[in-house]
Image 1 (cartoon, rainbow, N blue to C red):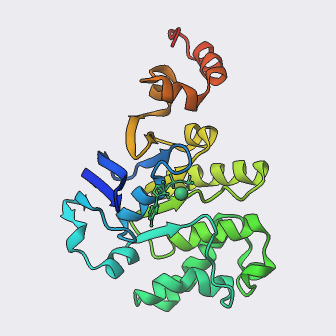
Image 2: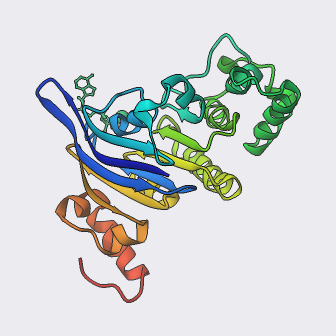
Length: 254
Ligand SMILES: Nc1ncnc2c1ncn2[C@@H]1O[C@H](COP(=O)(O)OP(=O)(O)OP(=O)(O)O)[C@@H](O)[C@H]1O
Ligand SMILES: [Mg+2]
């Protein structure tokens, strides 16, 4: 479980994160959403200490992470960034096996795991293992980015707009793969997006941020049926609200 307790972050005079308090349950797919600059990436990077809070406390499984060695912390937290971040001079196999190797896991076990993971996202290991990232399409590279974050079997995975560079069809396919995968692996996933369709589709709960503050946290159903203020309504979109209200019987207005 990840707990934020009155976490703030300032750069000079500007406060970009304002007293965030929330918790993310074990095995939850938690989506952070909001307009550009609202603080999504900053919030996420404080979980693996790429950014340190100015005040407040973040704990994982009741441990205050400010006392955990950042390098060790990151080995237990998978991280998928928007630009994929595969190492161009390493083959797909070497990329995926990187963290298990750093953690001194058994090579025979993780090499087998690389094959399993590649199969899981529809990439034939015999075809793809020895290729370099530049020899894969954008969507294939994204898949490798996702499984690389899973390779060392970390309990927590951070994903910062992992699918944003994809065309709508590949994107929907990867969303389906992620939710399918999550049914088997039950990781705690923190997923950043600014796409409400994506959030409503994949999230267990959605946390909407505006100007570094939480404006609503709830399940997709709660956000659509009980948006708490105008900002939430604007972000979800009035058209979608009307459409979904008629889809969910028993709910009106809003
Ligand atoms: N190193 C920094 N110094 C000063 N301000 C910063 C720094 N890093 C981020 N900010 C500011 O903090 C705010 C939050 O940035 P953040 O990257 O978390 O936004 P975001 O919600 O991820 O946006 P996007 O959707 O565009 O990725 C922004 O206003 C940004 O300009
Ligand atoms: Mg960002």
